[in-house]
Length: 88
Image 1 (tube, one colour):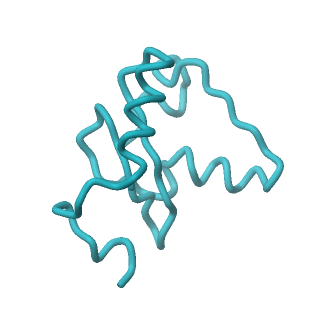
Image 2: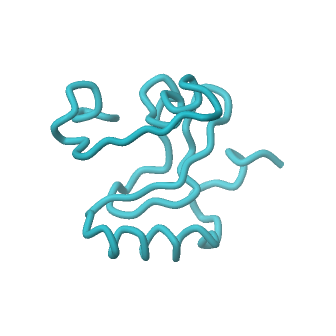
């Protein structure tokens, strides 16, 4: 079974608690843990977005992967970022 087959009724993941903890610690309203599969970035955990996936080409995850294994990506405020503010 691949990740996409788990559907929206999958049980909470171990990442859910970590996502909530990090969002609280950083005082941010949104957080995700995503994996890339096919043409989508699937959210294994999300807080505040009410989405389960986005198109891979629009994902922050794909951008980071394209930067290479030693990359670090810092986005201080995605709402101010010209490409990410309308992330969908």
